[in-house]
Image (cartoon, rainbow, N blue to C red; front, side, top):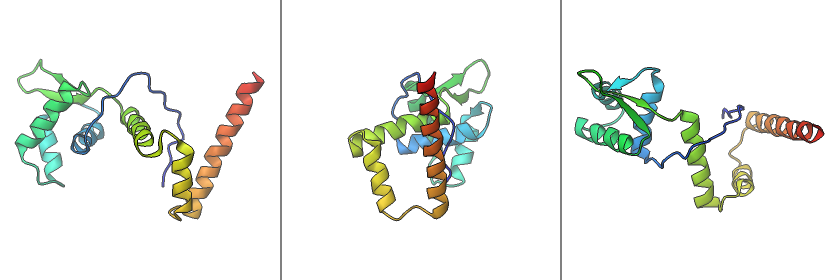
Amino acid sequence: MCIQRRRIKVSRKVPNISEAEWEVMNVLWKKEEPQTANEVIHSLQEHTDWKPKTVRTLLDRLVQKKVVGVNQNQKVYTFFPLYSQEECQHAEAQSFLKRIYGGTLKSMLVQFIQGDSLTEEDIKELRSILNEKSSRKTDERKE
């Protein structure tokens, strides 16, 4: 379990995206440059049985939701993410917490910890993150 240590600040509202749309976004995030619909289709067909029309529909939905942008200044349109993967993950995590745990992070953590799903390595990493967070809060109070 690799836990992101970087602080993420989401300043803009990320639209909700479906599980299938996440698949498309993962393809777009993988490359650092805009991709054609055919490139996205090809990438997705490596691990899904989706038809090209399905992928084009998903791209269109993401464009309508303003999660994906389109370069239309070429003969072939190219698509690119308008939100970072971290922004979308943060928004999805917040949505999950609200829906399932009433917005309480502690309830979720307690359930995971009591469920024996954490390795010793995971526990050490979590302790380190919590200690770091606690130290930062202490430093902020001193200022």
